[in-house]
Image 1 (cartoon, one colour):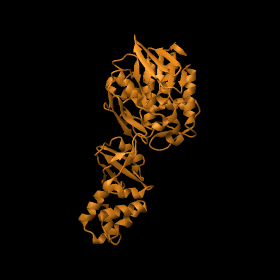
Image 2 (image 1 turned 90 degrees about the vertical axis):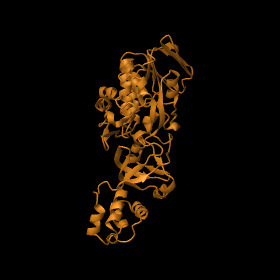
Image 3 (image 1 turned 90 degrees about the horizontal axis):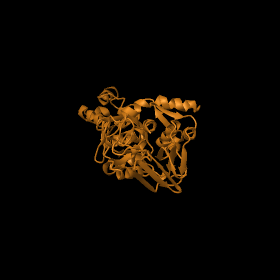
Image 4 (image 1 turned 120 degrees about the horizontal axis):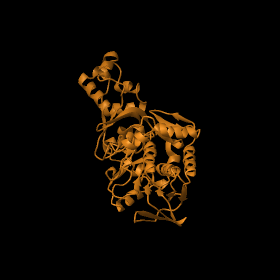
Length: 392
């Protein structure tokens, strides 16, 4: 395998890299897939609680964040969730829809990894694991890569090494460093789909660690209705992970704790149950510990009948847009994905090839395209990998 010629070298044996290598190999290309880890698909294996949330049937470009919101349209339209589901079913992998269009394996994420490895086998892909790419050169239209004892060259090089989220699995910013070496711009990477931390006046809510409730989380124009979870460090749960992709330091996250209650509901409750307390009526809709903390913070003691309409209106307004100002996030260590990455302005949306460097491609999480929670990022991995594989 020393100094051998290939048609393409793919760096990174995660979801995007495995799929791209397999598809290119099945198109008759001689492909070398390299990863510094000793095994392939590490993030796939832990995803979805070990069952791999492999796509989302509601995939649409507007459910992705990017400096160019239109960039993902081409790839996503040419390789859809139905296309990947057809592959899953061809391998007789049982699956189910959990919620909100999220598709999971009934069994194990290992089934998806095994499927991708079999697809690579069918494409004749050579896989080299356990050694990082220590040297990468480009001259005369050819890329040369050294990875441990392996030295190979090819006219196409695919960057599929992802971003730095979940570093304990070996994730790094390698793709960004390599992209910069080739003169490509990088949108500042930051943690996404990540728990947020609280400080200052919000510290009281840490006492609710373990308590969850269905809420609507707002930040700027984004809003998500799902569960929020209080932790010993701050806020987590699907609603918070979703909104974290839109949050930046200094922003306020507003929580509607009672999304099914219409405006003026407290005034109505005053008329129908004048002797009830705010803590009691909140306890009818929310976990008791949360209801107690919210009632204490609002400060309406006594019976509803003894409170003014103005005070009750203000209380219901606050419960509908309760402001939190997180002081940070739990960082890349707990982030499910990375927001930002290789600038889409540098790439062809049809082929994922760098405009400045013919033969250089970037796919998956390495690119400045970040999906919502729930299988969207896997679908971007499949779609961007497919786009590049058709062009190699």
